[in-house]
Length: 169
Image (cartoon, rainbow, N blue to C red):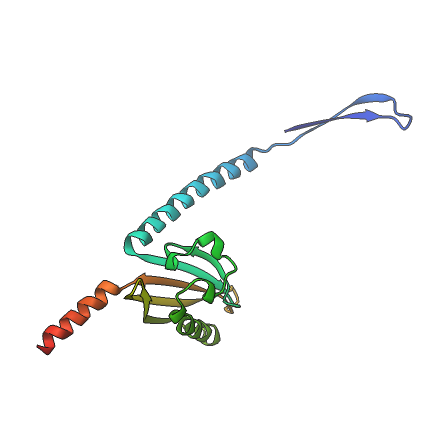
């Protein structure tokens, strides 16, 4: 990069030209590497979300005040962009609000991961979900937010019930 500027006397008379030449080869190389890394990261995220959708899994992060920071997937049918800053009651089915808040508060208090299978009603049917909550720690080890995953396990629960029924007979 060349930077040219006029050289003037105190009276303002032009006496020359100043020129600064800056070698930006390293900067350009780093910018190109960063752009390539961004493309690879985007591809990786797209593949991750495809895998999550195929597996019926949604993921989310929440801050210590239990407001949503980010949602990926079909998290209870909410709009992920509109969910940023929302609270539990604004997003999840009413019967899940209490159990989810308790799980999340426990993870924040203890720093230990938690998981639970929870039922809720949707369109007159019982739907089961498996909820996994983990603390997300800062570099010094403090719990700074929560990471979570929710998967629909209704088919597994139906199969388990069917097996129990067959065993009972």
